[in-house]
Amino acid sequence: MSKNDGEIVKRLEELYSGDEQNIKKLPLGINDKYAVFSDLHLGDGLGADNFTRNEETAIFALKYYKDKGYSIILLGDIEEFWQFDLSEIIQRYDNSVYRLLRDFGKDKVNMYHTVNAQ
Image 1: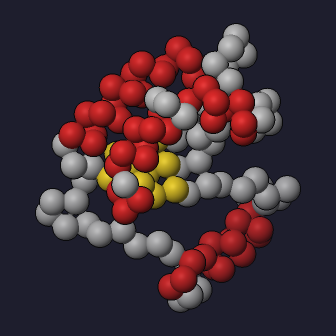
Image 2: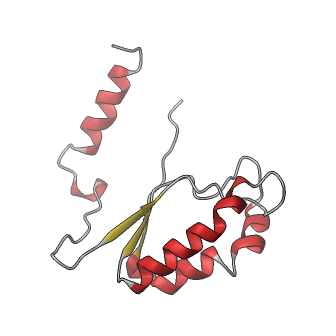
Image 3: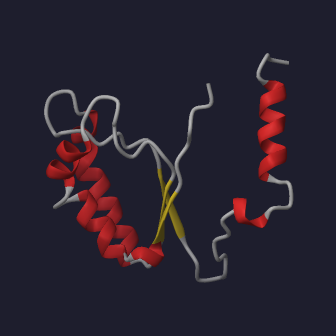
């Protein structure tokens, strides 16, 4: 047992307390398909931006999933806010990654974020 176990149990009980508004339900029918993206860490496109090495692969994957009718789940750490301003990130990726995400349509992109509990 760690010193955080009590807090973890408390948060899990809050999540699953029967309060349905805490849980987002996604359709899961025979034709529903999801691709999960996490930890992209988009930056400003310069030397400290680790995503630049993966941009081509991410763009290919997003196009592939869109063409195949997938919905996208963005699971957190999409942007690298501790190191870059949002305006810098948008300026760099608005016409590539963000445009592709917009092309899916709002009903096909589901965003979740994690909050580090201190």
